[in-house]
Length: 285
Image (cartoon, rainbow, N blue to C red):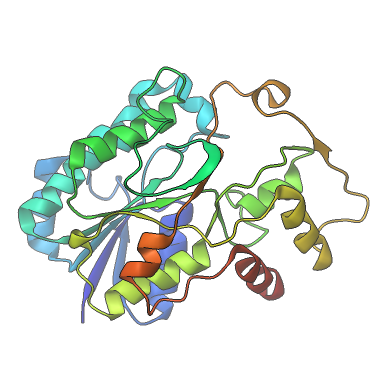
């Protein structure tokens, strides 16, 4: 059976590990305290011993409580999102291991189009970018096309996890009316299992956007949650302008990502619409 090594015991890594384990996959989850996978020589030697079929990197800097923290912890952000993952990528490349790197679509902004994998980022290595976006863009620039770099955005699962977009909606009072692409972690888990179960070689894929089809307005998301009685009746929201009214230190990405490449390369994988994914989650939490 194919063996899978997941890097990072955070929100996404742990969620993926539990799912793959429930599917009977031979999967192992480690953190940097277990082995420094951001050091090329340390991780290369570990791979010689472990011999995984797939390495899935779910680690990185996200910031507490959000990416604004990257503006003051630039060195840490750069190491965790760029320098370290480049070394991880190189170690997998040196052993010919199928490598999946979970990254971010927060390197684009604007609603004039659905951004494809071929579009040059307009919120990355530029003066008006957040340092978080710069670090994600830099990783893509430095690693070329080795491995499959999966761009996700605004991940969500249940209403109870503090990192879930849905949970954040429940906590916030001020929101912005936008149509942002988002990623259901349930669909992401299913996709990664599809890759493993069908013995897909992800190293040939390169960059891949993974978000749900037909993203909804913020007010539409709230309506769906209310329809499932997950928001208190007395809960009110203020809709405000973005950076100024929310007091953010760093610019935010607001965009839609194209799923055309995903659907073209993997026609047998059913990608849910955002509405379908929300209905599934809210009916099963």
